[in-house]
Each structure stands twice: as C-alpha cells, then as structure tokens.
Length: 112
Image (cartoon, rainbow, N blue to C red; front, side, top):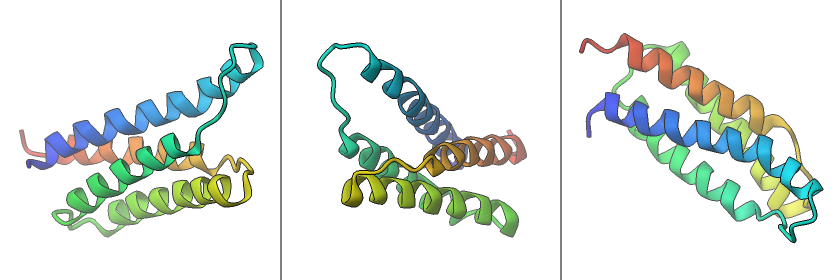
C-alpha cells in the first residue's frame, strides 16, 4: 500500500479518534443511556499502530519516526489506564494530535 494512502488512512483514523475523545464526554452529560466503551479506544489504537508501523518502515527521517511512535505510546498509556484502572488520562488527546501532525507532515513530504 502506498505511503500517501496510509497517511490518508492515518489522518482519518486519528481525526475520528480525536472527535470521539472530545465529543463522547459531552454526550455522557446528556441522559441518553450511553456509556463509555474503552474497546472503541483500543480499536483506534490498533488501527493507528498498524498504520504507523507500515508508514515508519519507509521513513528515513528519525524525528518523524519519533513523533509517530511517541504519539502511539501516549495513546497506549491512556487506553491501557482506561482498560485496567478505569481512569481517563488526557494523553490520548496529545497522542492523536501528534499522529495527525505526523501524517500531515509525511503526506506533504511525498513527491506526488
């Protein structure tokens, strides 16, 4: 799969993750009977990790690799804390923003 397609998938998944993380707490205020499911966050993490793995195989820029993997680590910490301890750590917002930034930079660096 071409790297620019992976970047588009990565940007989309990270944006959806960020929207989910920002909007979902607001929906919990409204009494709709919706409860938080940390497995949705885990699904976004798995998609993001697979895409980052595939994208970083072809990247020579070490700081961009660091941005991608540190973002995945931040999201992982937040998701695991939610799954294991049932606490929400806002590192997921920083990680999702880092993934979006990394994919945009990587996308712009391609020779189209």
